[in-house]
Image (cartoon, rainbow, N blue to C red; front, side):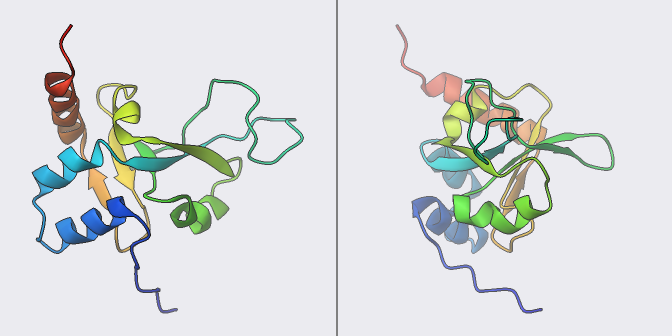
Length: 144
């Protein structure tokens, strides 16, 4: 089966393509990504009556583990990019559209992040890079 050509649908996807093509440095991409929205799949709430609807404020994100037991938080550059991946993940039909920085602030140490898993235009962010991004975020936070 031939995979579709990845046509960017938002600014984040345009920047991702530029970074993958060497037109934007990884550091500049990661810095810019912090202000962009990403789609993070969350576990469906049982018995909510509406598929993908959350009644509580406690969303459980989609986390997978690699063969070494590393926890990897799954997210996408656009909700449409998640469809085929989520077809293989029972219990995950909805999600949140939030700024990447918001997610970073809530990630535990030692987590990796995968963006657009299974797609040609995707990236894996190792735990060390997640830590560096958190440090950058803290350094750029307004001081009171």
